[in-house]
Figure 1: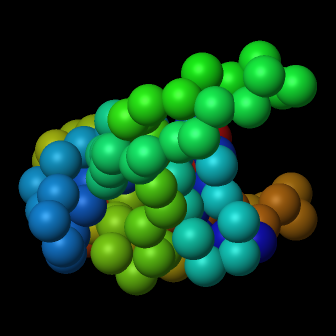
Figure 2: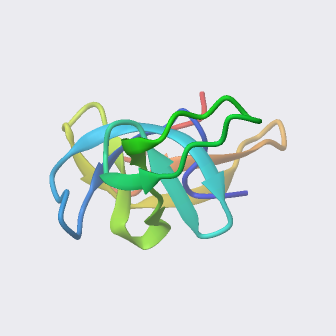
Length: 104
């Protein structure tokens, strides 16, 4: 089980976009893509076969998973995440600061 999953609310804790909040759109190994965070400009060649127009485009790039932390809605701050097993046998994530379960 991963500490950060798709559709989680996260906050960037290091790097150029430190302090920005967003929703995780994709997780791939140790890289995460956060909505409207780490947006860069790239020069793109036109490709008529694929219908791509050339020019300077803006796109979201990935962040290392260590540079984001799960956002605790109760405190509106970054929080560490732990794992525990419930009585019914489910393994869930919980916030270490207030022991609130993330996966309800």
